[in-house]
Length: 463
Ligand SMILES: *Cc1c(COP(=O)(O)O)cnc(C)c1O
Image 1 (spheres, rainbow, N blue to C red):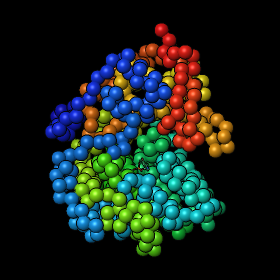
Image 2 (image 1 turned 135 degrees about the vertical axis):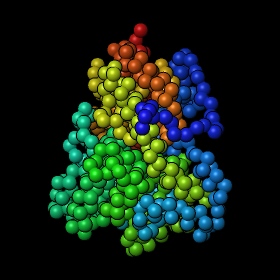
Image 3 (image 1 turned 120 degrees about the vertical axis):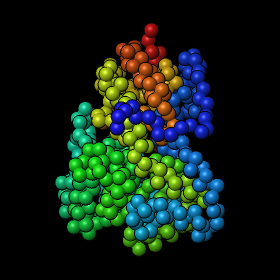
Image 4 (image 1 turned 90 degrees about the vertical axis):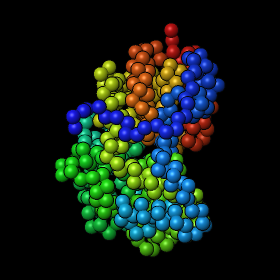
């Protein structure tokens, strides 16, 4: 290639205006929202990086596909198109559409887990853990040790600790009905898992007679990292890499709101006939008939097209580069974040950035509030507000105080990212003036969604 600039590999056909607000308007909005970004009206946000889940832009091909949607209750044409798209990538025999990823988890775990079981995973996503625990089972996180060191560079920081896997299967194998690997490792910073790690984990599982499932939400981003970083894969297509990855597993759960490039949907897929039979029964109870699984025919069409588009090399290059580009900008001014940058988000290390704010005044929460007030940017705290309250009622600091900036797919352009970098640099410059918060209303579960706060020291930012 003669030219170095990586462009957005699309042109814009439909636009959705975003609204500028003044700093004063944002101060009022956040105060009224109890200093909780979840309680803002989305309209009052300029750049919304709360999540990459279901927030992306669909293509003209996806919208066209939706017009073809067959809304027949059973055996719709759209289902067979969807099933073929999933099978082309995964090679898995049984494909059950679901309305989201967590529905696939609930059906799978509801069918195969019993109290006291253990599910090893590189790192459980929060809904995955919640669904495992809902069955009275234990979600065991066994990432490699580097996963918990924000500044350590490792090409596949999402990898599973294979010795730990070997150990749990040897010592407690009777309690393990299945093993899962999450690609990319969302809760661990969007970090990829290598092909070698999936292959070896698969060999270990199969030697113990255990099925391996992929939490495949970001399989395409993971395939791209393998292509870029793992010897032997540079000349393979993302589709070939994804196919090899799935060839090692016995099943998968998927949220199509991520690498399905759709606004809603997901699936559960597997090879085992008996498990599939049990899961179809569960699916009918909660989601619907197994050829629509809680989705409209047009949703199935949008996902079928999305699964093909997400493996496009130009798209993946642009996608991964957008996050790395923001990382380069932040590195230049010394803003600390989890390195290397992951596939779908950049995670700022608020503990390193705001050492003067104690954990129980929620440094990452305070930083994300100030990002909104100063620049209209909405991020999410992954720290002591989200994880601080323990099952025994005590409060403890989270392992890390992170602010996650998640990028919706195909939504924002480079000028949005340049603006974002400028806001981050500005807020970094005023970091000494940022103060913490106290929680004044605390809901009993998943408190971060609806808790209310006040500044712990009169103001959030001192003059
Ligand atoms: C989003 C996500 C899920 C759950 O999917 P939903 O569609 O939000 O229910 C599960 N695992 C991972 C890794 C995810 O990122």
